[in-house]
Length: 433
Image (cartoon, rainbow, N blue to C red; front, side, top):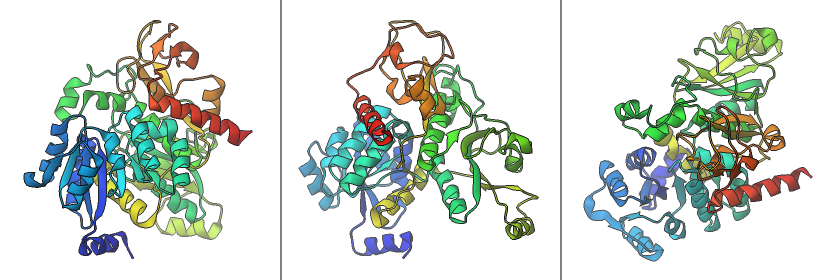
């Protein structure tokens, strides 16, 4: 039975998939609207520190005002949901304690919030769709291990590039092709010095947060996304920061191949990104040495070979996320998660000359950007993961474009993500011993 048929059946039975959403910004609001168009799935509880955002997201989705209620208690929220109401909350921790939710979606984009929400949900044995890839790139491995131990699903979403690219990977791997490279397009020109101030005008034109746009322009978002993808499939960056050449859908199979064959890669089984018209899509490069298959691929207009590209020209972010929600709840399936010790890391780099005593403002800010590196290199060099950077205080000067080490900062010990990362590091040492 297809997902659509299963959801229709749930709708007919009057028991839709009940979704809790944390974060009613651009991504969360889009998700809520999309679910309102669907059979058998509803956002029944929305948590945001700004209550007007939660009620506003419901309103934009067409939910009548008279069924929206504010709650500050899990029992009150549960009763309201049973009565067919939609609940708003300002405390995301309460969401995990609501017994009649099937799944929680984290959509804030704040690494520590993403860690806390996932932690709370898993402890309450609820499935988690993690739209917060920044969290996943930092502590996704331990969250996945916790979820499996609790008998629930922890997964990224098919709506973001890592999940969309994983779909291509699963297709090619299942068919037995040799996969060379998996990646995404980047549609903003790369500017490592971008700040919320320099991005403010364009962000206003796009009706988005300047901080979010900054994380796109300075490359951090791409690095984090490919870190989560790499960790999920066991692929590393070819070089620190990846190559990021110009490419188009037609040139992918010539660019992202080994240097010996005219491409940019030193090795295979790597994650990458392309500047230019590949965005907003994702891609995969594969090859085979089977003569009949090579002949058939040429016949099927896949190109002269021996390298071929699979290209998905879109990803629909929050609008596509209900597919991952349905897979998790109805089939117990994972879109993308890290089941083996991570092989990639997004490390923290000084965006400008930083002085001892300064506080780091984190992803999309004025002080640092992220860059992907092999996890073992990051460990050997004691490099600070970008997901732990927010709120750190520098104890050493760090020149512009220099990676920041753990020894250069005092961590913000109040963050849940810091404690989870310590547990994850210890777990990895134990697994590797």
